[in-house]
Image (cartoon, rainbow, N blue to C red; front, side, top):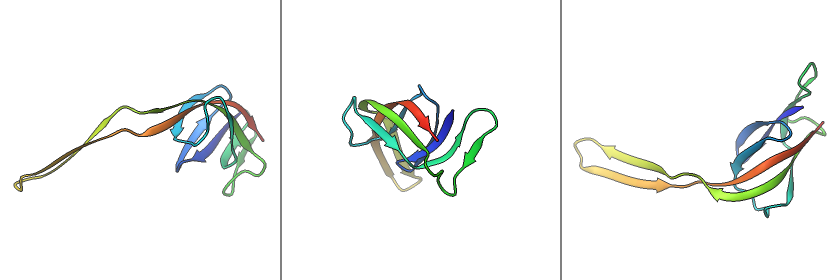
Length: 104
């Protein structure tokens, strides 16, 4: 059983037991969260349900493990022959979840 769902403007393919980092959610660690915006779902063999735009009645249930911040990336901007240089760092917040069930 697998599903493709959308959260935070990004799409993720998951199966039960999958751990992944998604854009930050306002949920406490240890709580359960349900994603209803399922775009595609399948049983792994013959049956595949494609949503228009979402699959009716499908949902993904997950447990929030922790919140954190990703590794720092460097954003460096420069214009040649102008003496313009700008260096910035950025760390994106994330929520780590473990998928418990995919319901059709």
